[in-house]
Image 1 (cartoon, rainbow, N blue to C red):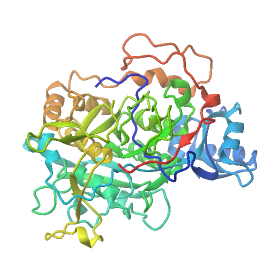
Image 2 (cartoon, one colour):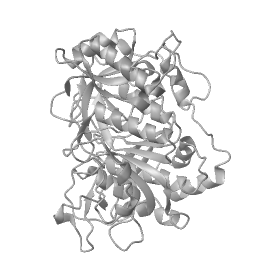
Image 3 (cartoon, helix red, strand yellow):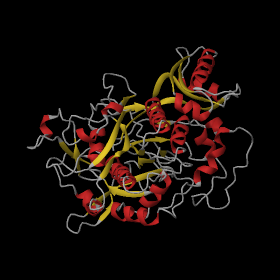
Image 4 (cartoon, one colour):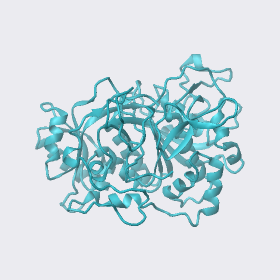
Length: 493
């Protein structure tokens, strides 16, 4: 499916209370422009961050070293006891040393509640996984980062495929190995990599894989910009160290009154964290399209559910300028014919559709009422959060079969050969066409100047830029980026 440059993919689920604006008091995320002090190192940029925060009577609450080095300028979250986050953001936005700034907006998982009984794993059949498994069942050298509420590695259908030693927790508490205490991330993980052919539970797309639990949502399914940026910093650092991470799944969503164009996005710290990961060209970034019957990349028309009103865009699915991101809508199926269609709740306009209704997958092992006779805890639920891991799992399965030199963009091209996910067709396409697939995308080139600060002509780019539209006539600009209202009430996918 073609993406307009106005259409961007991310499924980070910002949700909290019924308020139209939710952010942690006093916390502001800031990205400084590249340092002119010569040699760039994480330690020198951390000193720069501390000095900068001190000049505003604030302190550095979080510092993101991998993202700072990639930016060339300090990437941090600062805290002020004396100033409101919005007011401090407004002041910093006019500071000549600041490249991007925003309050630390809250966010949450994206799930549609479903109390139905267990159903069969129709999704795997629908995407032709059973044919793909005749070719490959995955590989222990392929890693997938699951940025979510963690993964319950004690579930016997997951244990062998969870890299608990690499688990990371950005929300605090005792889950230092990325242990799940909410359930959402464990369900996502089962679709990506529940052990197959072991006589118990369900089969994930990858019977063999290494899933890294990156806990960015707490035991209520809530997080914020800081927890997700911290997660992206961690994954980017692992890739820079040589870890073979081929997919990153983020089943999250939020609604912001920010038009998704160049000027606005380069001033948003969250987008810049995604861009740093995207620029590695190693991992396909998979995000949920969202669950409120809206359209990715287009403004909402009225208030409903967690959409606060007209003019709001779903993020991160509406991010543009990222070559290796895929947004995923949820598919349902007719009970008799098996014909698939976009689920009633799913946002439209995503890059691809995948099964997202009545998806049976792994759940928290401590939840005794869901444990079956084989000792595996399972639950059936629905949402674009359930659709996204089908695509992330497919990316890992393809990566296990084609040359290790494959780029994220090559894998993405193979995944998007149809509007609805068909992993067997994509696997064959990647294998047959590997030598001719483009190694990198072009959409991001329009944003490659985001680290420079001279005046540019941001008229519609000429030639093939990987999109079907331009971004002329940018509406808000960085100066107005976060003066607009941001919705924080989201729904779990």
